[in-house]
Length: 106
Image (cartoon, rainbow, N blue to C red; front, side):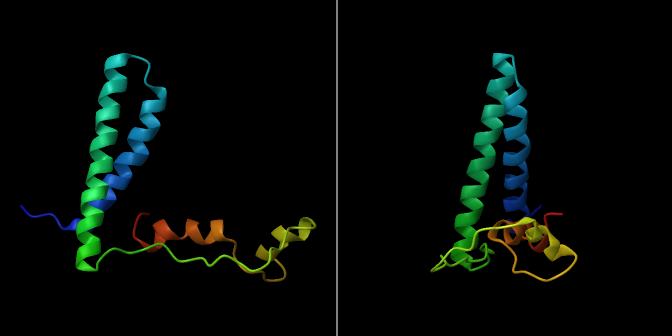
């Protein structure tokens, strides 16, 4: 059975997320060690699959956000009104929240 690389890469990301959460709640040393090993395996899977995907030109990179020349700070409560009233540009954090959706991680 052959498994394509993009799902393997996604499985590694899912493993890091889930095992990272699990390790924070592990109390017993043997359980902590188990989740620690699982976390290391997931990181290794991500690293190896990312390297191969990059070599083959199949890795989907995160969007590049250039460093702005000037900064615009929120001055009033109208910042959240952009969802309902006047439009505003998306913030970097909002753009990054779309990445799992666009990469099929929903």
